[in-house]
Image (cartoon, rainbow, N blue to C red; front, side):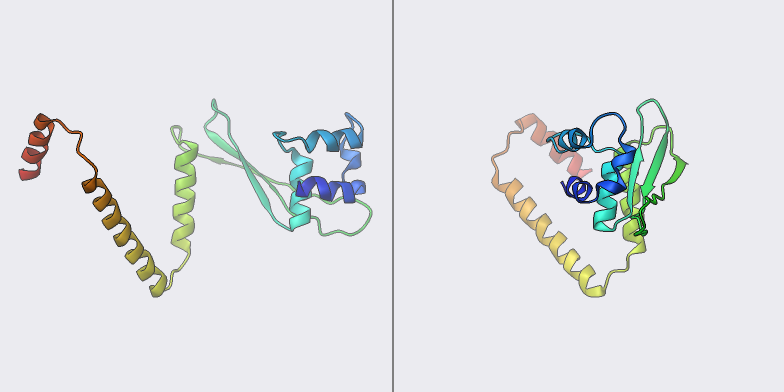
Length: 158
């Protein structure tokens, strides 16, 4: 809704980009719950919140991600300045979106330096979490058959 409000308050920045329907009809359609945002909405949100927004597009049949970025407009004159940055980046043929996001987050965490206190706090939390999980698993009644339990013991001995 931030984008719609910004567009209502600054129609001169966007109205000429909408040629298919009336401006009010466009705003009403875009403000409906479940409507996907388009390039104008994304640009309006970037302008309002003064953010750079990057959208990663992908299609099931393609093995590349297509990135579209918007930078907030810095011009206060009567015309619109939009700075789209477009690039394509190859990905592995079998790389899924989840794998891509996991790789991105891992790289992001690697670039961040954590204080020793934060690392210790995380280590203590992980240890407590494992203890609670193990305690809850041991308190639940076992559904394994006797044969499965015997196999489990046999593998544990090896």
